Image 1 (cartoon, rainbow, N blue to C red):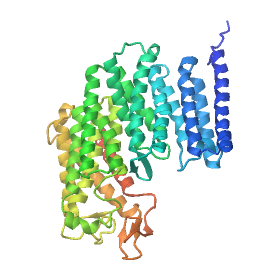
Image 2: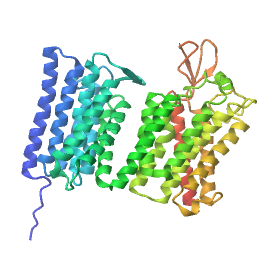
Image 3: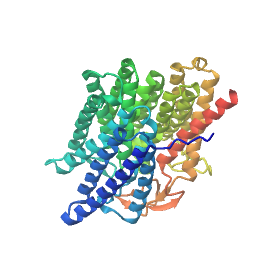
Image 4: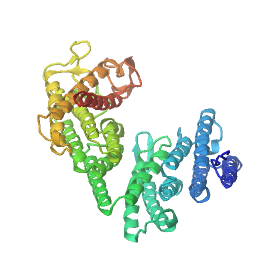
Length: 509
């Protein structure tokens, strides 16, 4: 007896796939043609494509049975868009006032959501793509046409407060509308109060995700952040949702206060809000206490000894007011570990979380305390005396600061640890993580002395991490690698703490 293989896709799906392909191609060509004939701004035609494409892809869960046509089509479009950007094709959808890879991120985020949600929760998929298509477009339109825009900056990106407010309002309306309008995609009954609650949560998440974006990355951050938050609110109990919301509120409070006291700039505050929502909302006190210990104490240390630090500030790439890249370099790996732990709650992930944080805490304390040393530091690579503040310089006081920072971080972590054997200070796990943090700080110093980019100022002759010095004078590259900056070194430091903790855990277990 011969078995007849079941087709991968129903015949109706093949027909719709062909129509969908034709519609997208026609949409792109029409946008390019209209832009040229009507001499419209490039951003206007691009947003038109953005909106209509989003509405098209959001309709697919209602029309298709199999997810594979959209996975294939999304992957193909991501490749085509990337080639088009590189070769300057289809300017009606690619060319903007800044270099952007948004049209590549768009299908990538859709493919990821399709693979994760198509067979489990299509309501989350549809809602996330509509937020990207509609709310993001409205925010851009408001930001461009408002009569009295209030600008704020995230690095080289310029945003408007009015656009961000429009993003929040539209996200709220879309979420509430989808929860009531697409009930066939989700079996549970959702009350108006819970729908409004969920809408407020997603409004904050989506707005912050859009605010920190650059080069079109909002086409990734908005749908993925919205999808995760909405999925959590729909798949967990009201109690868990309340804890998540309280964690988000705490993250918002920390971000706002830190911005007000100039621990963080605007981009750092937004990144801290999102990172804090993950750590506080998912990890609860177990993960929140160590993260708060690192952030609060390290920020306070950065404000101490201003007179002595002023001499070294001309050498540092960045000042004491942290931006998004410093926040992610120091806490990004820890945040990813919390996400993994949320799905796979194993003891090892808490150890890795503390190892990563112990590394950046030890390094931060070594810098902030060591810079107040009266004796000149020495390069960890050549052991020659170097000016205070030089990357890769170590001192006795700085090393003691690293030891103290690692011990304090691990102490707070072990006191709230879910792993019973790690709760006693002096336990095997305690020593393992403390040593991992100290070793990671040495890795940071070693990279700073060897691979981190160093420049010289043609006016004063000083070695510095800055691209400009002495009244915005361009500096000259001296040594290291130009693409290795302080944020990258800090990120490697956090990862090193994780690796050392993992190796120790495997060796002792």
